[in-house]
Length: 214
Image 1 (cartoon, rainbow, N blue to C red):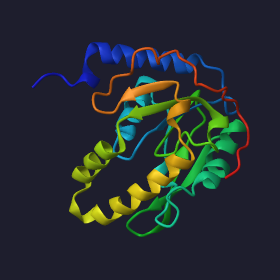
Image 2 (cartoon, one colour):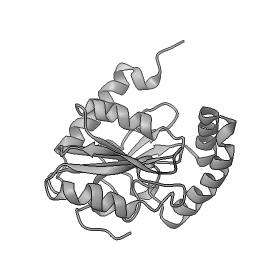
Image 3 (tube, rainbow, N blue to C red):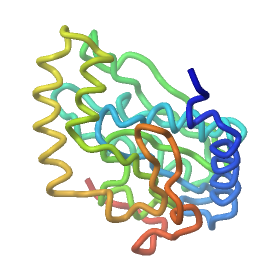
Image 4 (cartoon, rainbow, N blue to C red):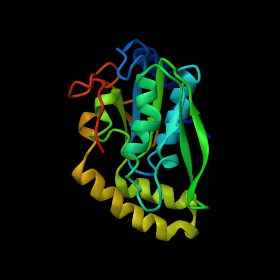
C-alpha cells in the first residue's frame, strides 16, 4: 500500500505553508486569528483540523459537535460567541461546556487557551454568524452524498436514524447559509490535499472581527 496523500512530503510541505500563512494573517478576533474548517458531515474536517493544529504547533481546536445538541444541531452560535469568541476577542483564555451525546445534556468543560491561531471545526463553522470573526475559512471538498456514506460506514447501523435526520438538517442549513463560496482554502476531502491556488487566496469577502448575532 502506498503512502496516503496526506502523509507525503509534498502534502506536509503544503500544510506547513498553509500554517505559516495563517500565522501571518492579521488577527480577526482580538489577538487571535480564528480559522474555520467547514464541510459536510463525514468530509474529514476533524482529521484535517488535527493535522493543521499539529502544523501550527498545537493550536487549540474547538469542536462544534461539543456545542451542538440533539434538539439544536445548528443552534450553537450563541454558545460559541459568549463562551469562546468574546473571551478570546478580549484577550482572555476561553472555556465552553461540552455536550454529551449519550447523556443528552451538557456534562463537562473544554478549555480554549488564548493562542495566535485558534481553529473551529464542524458543519457550519463558516456560517454567516461566524464569518465576521474569521481570518480564514477552510472548506473540505466532498459532496454531501459521499460524505454521508463515509460517516455511516464509520458510525455503523446503530446511528442510521441519526444520520437520516442529520442529512435533512444539514441540507437545509447549507441551502440557507452556504459556507463554500466564502472559502479561501479548499481541501480535497478524500486525499487531504490542499487545492492548488487556494493557499494564499483570500476569502471572497473581507472578514473582520465583530459581534455576530445568532
